[in-house]
Length: 282
Image (cartoon, rainbow, N blue to C red; front, side, top):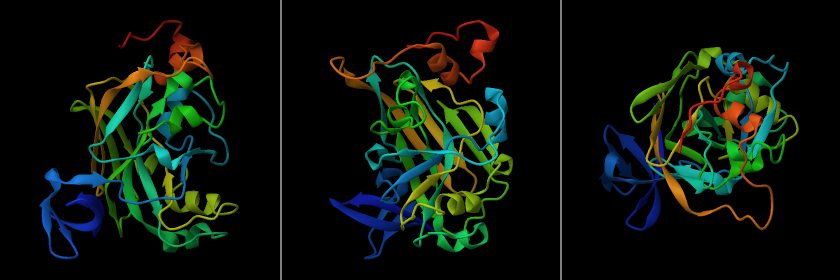
């Protein structure tokens, strides 16, 4: 399966093809993949994400899944890349990972059926739908600040074409420890359905990204942690967490909180039912 990446090579943005452990540019230049400065593999006009899709995640929250998908929007300013730093603003505690598969549009899609959607998909990449749950009480429904803050949408390392999304494992590791272990087989709505659903009323352009949902066990990480998301056949997306140099401004807008909703969501939605507080993390 061909894999295309975008890197910064000698000061220029270059698309390359992966050949084993090397990346090869059209002019023949080669660079070790481990040494390359990666960029997001695509440049989308929009990033759309499904709220819940994996059954394990639904069971974790102890809720009934809606009969059809619901979505939110991540701004393109949240884009990040393989080995990029994820910034947790000073004063925030509940920055959660969410390992996902990202669908990348290849042909303009509008009013297509699920059966037709495959012809409009360029390929797939790995995503991590980080969420800053300190703002869970803010922008209810849209989750703009929770999911749309800067650096919170890393994609990569590359775009893989001709990938069959069926029955593929999806795993997340924090500092080498397995923390999410899911499969595309547990998705309520598959990749083709998601594309067709959005494209009923929203035109999808080449490069646009749809995030397809995360398995159970999204939990907070802190500065110094390394988070890796591995999707079978798509590779491993690696990012590290850093602390923002300044706190979120306090002279306007809602402030980070530790409400029951914030804590419950950050630790899997079950703490409120147990009547206890989760472990403290700095």
